[in-house]
Length: 139
Image (cartoon, rainbow, N blue to C red):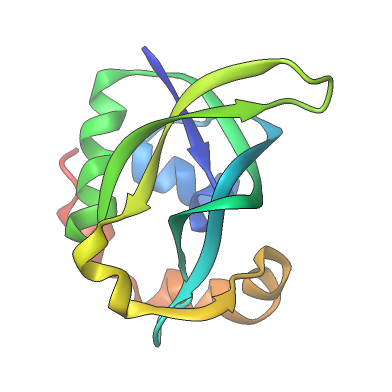
């Protein structure tokens, strides 16, 4: 079973549970050499490779295969799943899968960093109320 590095909406316990069907526990980690940008006209972010950048997020450990199927459906065609190294606060490292924007969709990104706290304050309710993809996730 692989670990998941989440850096956007999936950092929210209620959203990850809705998507995976599982109550997952997280630990804070950092991803190096990737940048988290806003997706144009959307409340969620995307990752791009960017040497020297850091992205804070959370690690969910030992995700079962059934949850990966649901996660892949949730993320859709904008992203590809990639294996990345993340670092814990104590300096130890783990490999995790995360969703990186596909190169041919990078034109859909703003040149502005996505902010999790701002999402919680201003975008989460809109996202949860307007996102229709939950109904299409294989259950």
